[in-house]
Length: 530
Image 1 (tube, helix red, strand yellow):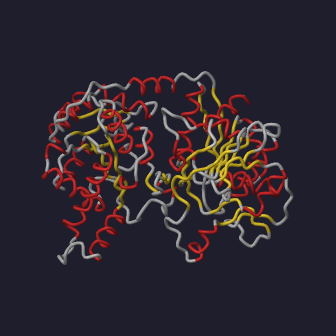
Image 2: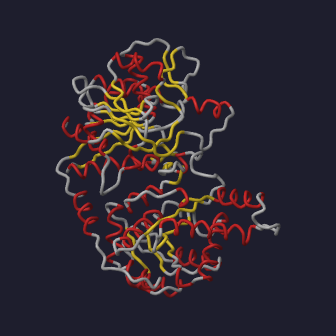
Image 3: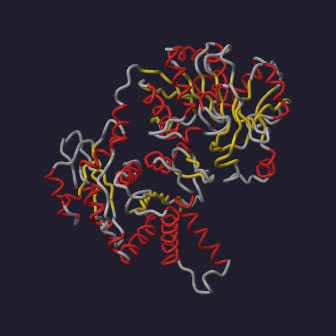
């Protein structure tokens, strides 16, 4: 089922194989017609993760980068839409030599080609490929066919892992294996047989049920891997290693590998549990609500980045999700008094925007450490223009493009695309350089005047207002190399303990073993306030 933990399982398998000295890369296959994840609703699909080369992808690509501590290229992500688009483009270019182009085998062959290209580009010993969705769904059939074809072509080079949920109904109190047996039969019906079954459940699967699954699902009992709920997703690789999963995968793939070394990872997990004091951080967003539930996956990279910096500083991250809509009523702003820091992440559109602006004004006046990312920076500039620079009839073009003073306007190279309603994949995407002002907060945090960060935006601080805003007290401490794009804004330490906004997305560079310096500076300021 969706959300069962395939991404974390894939990332953890990648990690434990990497710990044996193997070169690993990881791919995600999404069964959507969308060409990429950029136009998907975040409350349905979760966070859009932007790769170094600018491709907008599923959030699991972020998990791969964080667990493997490496950048992953766009070739490692595919959707049904992108695969079909590639096959049709080849047919139009006569690359099939005039033969009939058919869904089978040409679509699965394109999938296999992409997997092999990603493996070759990374010079990988093992290529982890995660297929999204659920076994039995119509959308997955062609990807499973690709697996079948690969396994038939080279049986010793392909290992199949099925992640299946084993419920423990409260009214019964017994772990049930029948859903997993059914799922295994569905997989078998596609001509694919699992080498391993990862048994996701609230508790660890016992030996009796391992043997039952082995008997009915055609796997060895030792290849049924327990995957119980754990305190942190970062404990999963260590748990898998206790189950000897990396050793058994290497045996199935006939790979020679070194002794496992997860010592650095273990130190990180120990540090994550030994914080001395809690630091309360409010993340004020607009995408948290999904029906009656809270969907934190929308901002997963931001939340994880907060944790990494907190762990590195020896404090406990106490994160609260707050909907920006509730702060459109200024009576609710007093809730923010109890927090040590406030972060506003990226987003699009007008919903909840006045609430965010109210929050920014409140934390600025009440000296609560503030970190704004992308939209969070743009709205900080807008709030300052309104309430400090006293510019009348001021707005951002994203909210009101008829305002007299657009301090945030659409980027010049995006105006024609937006006018044509050409919105997919047209933003400023991927990694770009920025130059920092010496002595600024940003410079002190990074320890360098030159940085590279990932972007995802159409709007920017309007260059026409930079001088006016600077004279009013904003320091634009980071700019593009040509000085046209304002990358970082901040208020001086004399004015505020920590007030920083960035146009880029630093969370995409945050890793468990290398926290992002701006997040660390923010958490340090929040801990100091406490």
